Length: 313
Image (cartoon, rainbow, N blue to C red; front, side, top):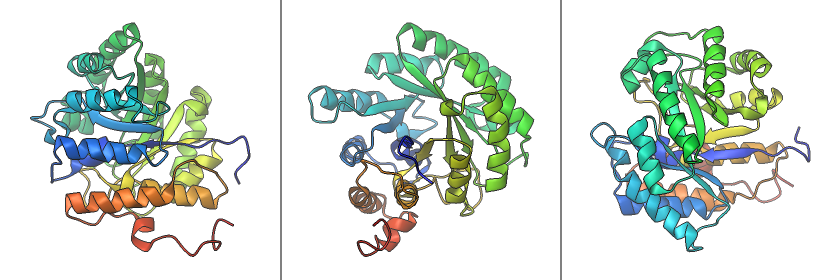
């Protein structure tokens, strides 16, 4: 399926989206060590924290200090200068912290359902877009790139089905804000390949498919099938989390994000090449499992790699 001109980009979200849903809170030094380890695997887009209130998201406390530390290591040549680090900055306070940190990319986070928006960010969808515009204005003035997340694109834990027309309208609205990329999220892991294809057929009519990323959760075991459906529609950017870390706290039985190892193994099997070292990534998962005191759900890390030559030769 892969062509020479195809280039898949993986956005590693474990250090932010993954950790923020963990019961065990990792200290600042451990989080910095995690990011350093991820940086050594060949990943070049890594979300490292969130400029949010530690009262509401204690797992992301000290993200300002963390960001300064990581960027300092990068400027000293201890981390590759090719890596793009980013943080979530959902409001004015967040983007001001981003400016202070020196980070050059932030993300905003919206929802496709009213109930989830009010539960998660304490405002309506319309109100959230007003906040986003304020963030965009400051980011533009400071030459900070902004990425947009749209959660509950396939289903809401409170409202159930989310209609395609609503998702398409919000994708267009977020893109018009000036974000360089919109990540469409299956927050509670209910999407099927047929749904993914149907939505993307409509989305790519109003936004260039090169500006779309997909963010799948593996709650019901369909994430890789959904990746395959997205690839057929022209998507080349996918979010994933080391070890399958994370999950939605509002989704019953949520098993976490699509694991980066599983995604990478799957893509290699389709013929896509990558500079990411899969074996190093698996070692990061093993290390992180020890730090969290639990086994992470990545299938590849659990099973190990097959004998050499049996899959990718």
